[in-house]
Amino acid sequence: MQFRDLKKQYQVLKPQIDEAVTKVMTDCNFISGTQVKELEKRLAEYVGVKHCITCANGTDALELAERAYNIGKGDAVFVPDFTFFSTAETVADLGAEPVFVDVEEDSFNMSPAALEAAIKKVLEKGELKPRAVVPVDLFGQPADFEEIFRIAEKYGLVVIEDGAQGFGGRIGDKRACSFGDIATTSFFPAKPLGCYGDGGAVFTDDDETADLIRSLAVHGKSKTDKYENLQLGMNSRLDTIQAAILDIKLTAFIDHELDGVNRAARIYSEKLNGAVEVPEIKEGYYSSWAQYTIKLKDSETRSRVQAALKEQGIPSMIYYPRGMHQQGAFKNIPYEGQCPVTESLCSRVLALPMHPYMEENDIELVCETIVKTI
Ligand SMILES: *Cc1c(COP(=O)(O)O)cnc(C)c1O
Image (cartoon, rainbow, N blue to C red; front, side):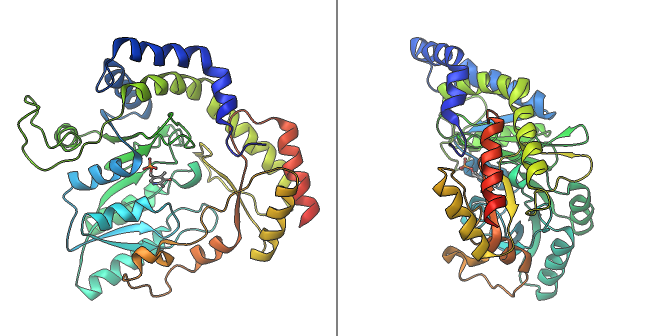
């Protein structure tokens, strides 16, 4: 069994993907081909924002968004403790200080109450200026943007949505990557919408911010002259081949893949409910199921379950084994025990195989193995 079956997906989409890739090679428009612009237009429309700027990966997308808001030295940027490293890494890369905020046990997403407490603490200390918050749409479910915006407005923070795992999720009719003042996503192959290499995108409604990001992504160039460099930038573009592949994959994503993962999640939860803690989606929220993550009683139970799954040839993953405050790279950032939920989650979460093409009998085998083992 595959954890995320990209081979199966390719079999299904092969004729169209092969044709699209061959066209790029025939045309030799490898960088900034028309497919890139067309994809950006489709992505912006789908998400429901004015501008989409594609770039080389989801980490660059975060860095571009943060640079567009001038985040740097002296700034405190609030990030969830329970996330992938990039969320905090980019903040620190720019010279700002990531402040680790605990998450909600049920949704795995940033806790608004913990956010407000962390802001107050930074203000009390008076060393850093609270500038921005980076809520993550973890495992496919959007963060609690209503509450987070209420707090962000109260303290004057920019909201940067890290939608690397959230693409395709919704709150009501509003789609992920449209919630933040600015938002980012990743097209890493295993993300909800993945390409065949690295890729990412930034989403904004603001014309000037969009221009600035287009400049920063290509060496700080001016709008009209590629060889006039107005500021220091990066070289961060999405290859035309990746854009051509994403165009096909976006159609499949909208047409049946989102339904496919939601169907798989429903079957999992029906079969596992009562035996383990199954993931909870908030009322009115819709997940794109980047991961299907259960919670076991403790770390010992998790090890047993993982071993039993492995015995049956079933892969499982621990996302995440440690919080940001436990990363060696952040050992100099003070941690005052403010993230107990993250610590507990790290010891007992387990992500199960999840993708749009999962067969019901595979899901059954996973569930039976777990129920027998706990
Ligand atoms: C994957 C991921 C990123 C980084 O994306 P890359 O394309 O791998 O650089 C950032 N944030 C989160 C939450 C992610 O899961």
